[in-house]
Each structure stands twice: as C-alpha cells, then as structure tokens.
Image (cartoon, rainbow, N blue to C red; front, side, top):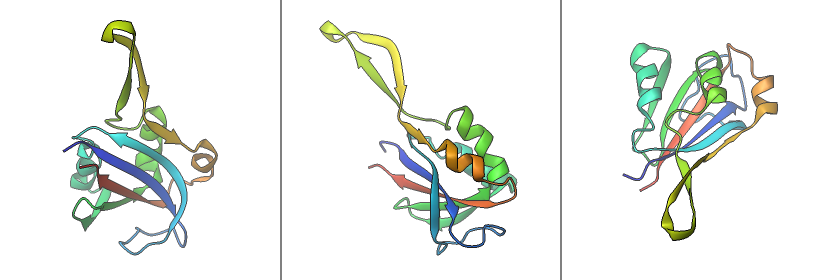
Length: 125
C-alpha cells in the first residue's frame, strides 16, 4: 500500500441530498495524495454517521458527506496528506516538507454548508 489519491467534488446535480455511486461530478473542491492510512479520517466520519461510505474496492472507494463536515478540515490541511521531502547535497534531508495537495479556494467559497459532496479515493498501489 503506497497511499491514496483523494479528490473531493461538488455534485453536478442536486447537492441537497447525499451523493450516490452514480452521481455526476461537478467542480473539484480539493485533491491530495495521502499516506497509507489516509482514509482513517473519512472512515471515522462514516462510522459516526457524519459521512456515508458508498462502496468500492479501492479502485476507487466512494464516500459522501456534507460540506460542513469536511471543508474546514480540508482548508486547514488535508488529512494525512503526503509530503515531498527536499534533499540537499550529500543526500541529507532538509527540514522543508512540501504537501502534495491542490485546494480550489474559489470553489470552496461557493459551497454551502448543507450541500453534499462526493469523495473519491483511489488506491495508489
């Protein structure tokens, strides 16, 4: 297991209800590469009833949740985000870590808290 590629989308049509496996993807909200345990946060939300696991086998897994449950956490720093390390001469790791993520703040700003978003997680292996 290398990790996960996670993408959050708005629903294209009728975001007032939970997404389904067949919901059309709208605008991308965020995308990031996560560590091997990178689904722990969304599985915890699903276990608490704050999100729904819609199924899949890792190629991909699909979830849905209300924007209010996700957006603040994603803007603060996507969960379990992978980092790229910077190396200096001689192979010594520098203290600089670069997150591997893409946040679309313009799309995030247009999301309403009650809308349901679609979360797609692809196994990187």
